Length: 158
Image (cartoon, rainbow, N blue to C red; front, side, top):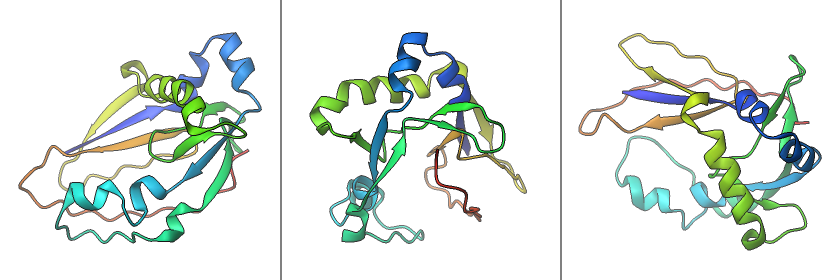
């Protein structure tokens, strides 16, 4: 079993100065409707599972976050969009936003920004969701995955 982690500090720092200037101050609209809305593909994709998902209309709520956030403790800038929750840019349609969001999401997960963590019995992993993206890799088909996750509530992205 493995997980991939991508540094969003590195993703931001690798952008051109022109792209950074354009993105600084931009706002992205995020929603959980894709993964957790009542018609979410996730429910069909995973089928029976011991993991409990709460699919509901509440997932359609939208929230605005900066495309580039400044980490409250380090002061470093990090890219803050992902293909699961970022729907569009503020004051733009999803169709208008798609090319740039697609580019940024692909850029954010480039191999040179990532590392792969291989889970072993009794492994512990810590990461900071303010500056790292995480992707669980389903490389354990046919085996039960037992995991305990603790999430600490943080500040609103700025």
